[in-house]
Length: 295
Image (cartoon, rainbow, N blue to C red; front, side, top):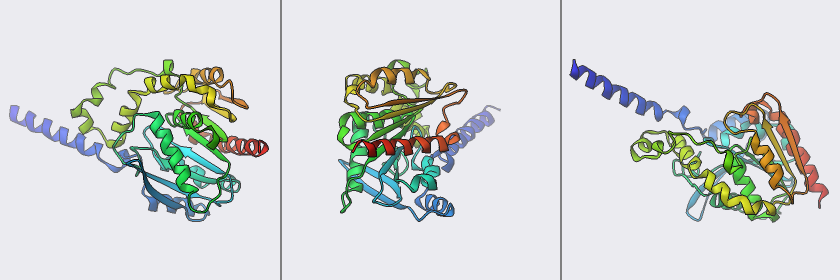
């Protein structure tokens, strides 16, 4: 009987480990799959780019005409550029903008499974993506950044460190207030070596980003004054993952922004990036118009 229980425990452990390695827990899609999804919507074929910046492999997908303003889409945790396929397919958006969806460090095909805990370094990667995109005889265009969840402090840090490159921010359900970051008892144990080994790579990177996030957000406190571009914040009042209070924090900190718009979604949860996608497209188009007016 003891032997059977031991075998059962081993089989259960191997089953759990195998499940954690299944494709659906990788939170990414192949370039071929994204290409098919975009083209099936009637859009032209997207192009895919991979490059390295300061030892960090980066990958992104691009759609739209190079002559249009640029919209850079930054996913949360976990996630990848495949979170943004709905925007890549959106004709209303691609009629007025070229769109890039990036795999943040550690996700998708940007050094999958290796976390980058520093928001400053992640923001530098976004700068490198923009630089890489406009490097080959392409004129720099007006640039609007969208960041969802943990992608929001990354785009905010980009606007703080490189305000000359950013013409508008759309912060969607953003984790930006250090004092509002939830602390879960299991986060530190999940970073122990044995559990890191067991976790799916995307989940491991997610936890490794969230652990130092309050401290990373604290570092940003004196830098909010550097954001001068228009900022739109969209947040659901029933967001159980990122408290709605983050909106009040942003309103208090964005003193030098040329315009702050708050869109409160009553009764909505954390997943408004997808459930309210057309609303997000409206806000992106509005930010593009505002950036053009500032020229």
